[in-house]
Image (cartoon, rainbow, N blue to C red; front, top):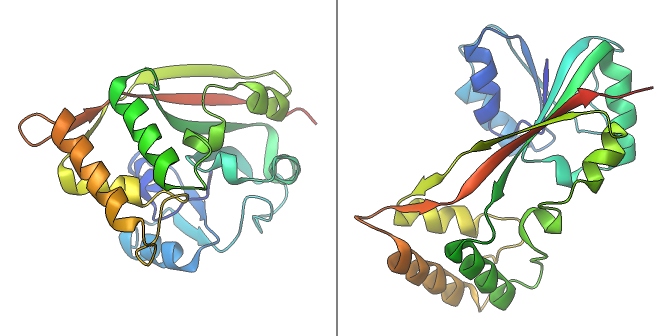
Length: 212
């Protein structure tokens, strides 16, 4: 199997623990080196310097492609063609995504904070959350969708760190950076209990065969 956009190897490890051989494809050198160190003791771990659109894997060698939390960054057309190239006949693609329950008060207030301070914020998951069009187009309508409750638990440090690490968030040299941190800190204090905050979240998995 191939984990595309493997990052530091968090999802890759889960598959390795189940006994799979995994090609971890990651274009970012810093993340790739972190994954190399993190997963160095796994015999089935193969690290690949490549991207979703250019995986550098051989034709028809992969049974399953997995994408976790990275799909909205890909060039859909090129990723689809490249996936068709490396998948074996009847091989599948699984796309896994965490989605906030946006109707919940805390997630509404986080979004309001981002809109206030982060000009590049277009909505969670780049504004694609809740939309099925992108998956309908990718799989041509032929897929299954499973949804799981998956609330996320944070302490103050991990809550702020998670929300400051988003691609649309501010860097430390931005004059609004301290105000964003303070706003997130205040949100945590408002909604936490006994030092922890539970963020309503679901995990979705779209899985299907890409017709040629």
